[in-house]
Image (cartoon, rainbow, N blue to C red; front, side, top):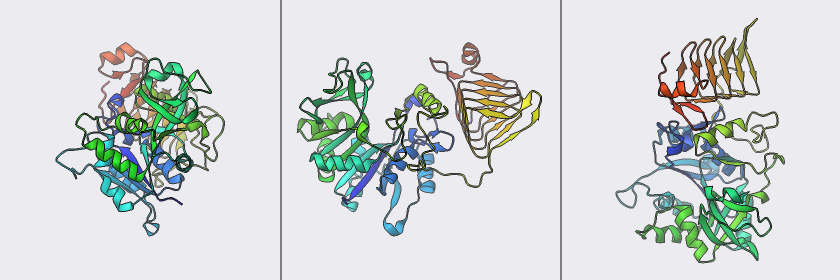
Length: 412
């Protein structure tokens, strides 16, 4: 077995997810009721049997550091660990200047572990992936760097970093293109391109050399995708790994290629809606490749009460977490986090409710994301009249999704 160190890049600010990131780093944003975004990256790494994991944090990292420390406890007897490592100014009076600089400033961790290979993954995507298969492909290719790539329609290429491969060797990267307007299609699928997933495997010595050279370049943006990958491409040492070739135990044809960058409010909302169909586009119930998190075992089960005429506690096409109480109210096509209370005659539809949210009697909530600890007053409407919501100073996306920030006070 090769020695593998996993590095999770979790310093992202997540400006496009405001106001959800006003008080926390993007990887710490709650998702799917019980989880935080970073749980997907960490679950994939640990399920891949790579259990020496460092999490590089920076922006408003307290809740993220706390979650990782409390939740992700592995066996120290077997030298298994998941450790949050904040920016420490180890090489000068500066914080991380980019993802490549974060690794450069943390090379002491690489030297301490002396791995053969380093898996580097982002912390803010929703997907399942067996990284051991990607490492095996990397070793077999003889490349110094391997980039995970997912097939996307060619007309969406301008939204991604696109990998242009050699026509005679579909694994070898010929060029790395940042949001190209007129890319070439794939040799076997001219209507598709390979988009970078932000996940990489490096031969350890080559990664150390690359980030060291990059750190000395004042013209560099010190970014893994923008600087390090092109550095390897120029030397003919970079390969692509097609996500389509990755097979995760328990996956189905419907969800096996699922990957979502939830970097915007709309994509974050859409990813939640993917969870709650009868046959989910992304299946959280795959017991062969579980998504781990703090399960809040001390919470009671969810409760649904009252069955009077016109006052029945129901939830359909929804996910309802432990500790939630649906009291004489209706929840439809929604994701409900732990300790949420939805009071009598309230209606919640197409929404995401985070921990400790309280929906008052007779309130109506539609197509909304409501962050932690928010109390929606009795009789209030949210998401029913977009212009009214804007006039009240609420955050509304172009598609009409209303977002209420953590601890935001609402007045009737």
